[in-house]
Length: 107
Image (cartoon, rainbow, N blue to C red; front, side, top):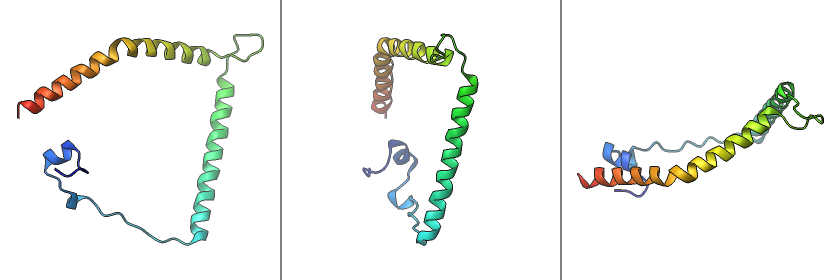
């Protein structure tokens, strides 16, 4: 088995020669610059829109208005998720690895 193939690709019978060859097209600097500028403008517009929408959704729960419900929920979910992962992740990984070992040893 080639080092570049995943086990799924190897099982499906794919070989390295089946992989598509990368295509390189030489573009002039003006085209590349215009494209980068357009994507940069799009990125800035999306950031402004996201910022504006976030400000519209803010619900002040303190007199200063610095803390939103979204902020509280994010912190609580993060703490809950960390605790849950600490308790369950190793068991989930062990079960998945054991199943894979059993599957491979049955071949």
